[in-house]
Amino acid sequence: MILWYDPFPAFLDEARLTDVDDLAEIHAAGFHRGWHAAEVEALLVQDGVITLVARRGTPFGTRRPVGFVMVRAAADEAEVLTIAVSPRHRGKGLGRRLLDEAIRRLYRDRVRHLFLEVDETNEAARRLYKRLGFKTVASRPNYYAGPDARPATALVMRADLS
Image 1 (cartoon, one colour):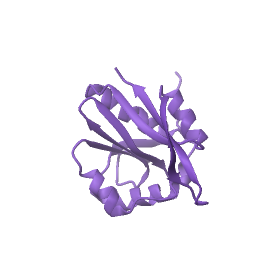
Image 2 (cartoon, rainbow, N blue to C red):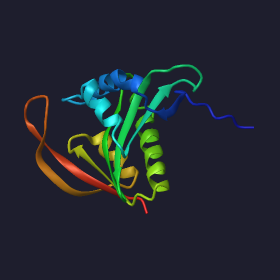
Image 3 (cartoon, rainbow, N blue to C red):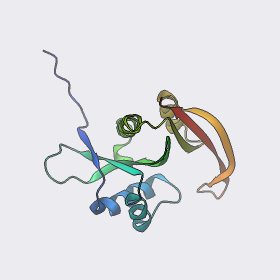
């Protein structure tokens, strides 16, 4: 018998309002302009927004989020609003697990296209998105403000889910 061992046990869960401060902290650690808790909460309660969190450990007991993905769906299209994993937990496949689950839910809901924007210099994210079937369909020059105040180009990517 082969036993599968996960060196980083985590489970995926729906985000709760009690997670808002943790999600804002995770987002701020991953982006030059992080979201405040009030911004996270406003999106979390919007119709059509799916927010999944990765929690370390098992589903038993209360666990703080270590990553999350937020997706907004309308009709047969959706967009990834954000995806972030806390710096201590990056490189363990959590971003992929979160996005995989979001895509499964969107597919189940008959969403045909999923869009996202990514900084063209974010190689790790671009590799992940490409592995998941996203293709670059447009670019937005000077879309992001980087930490050095230089503008960066956003790549608009799309995955066809149907």
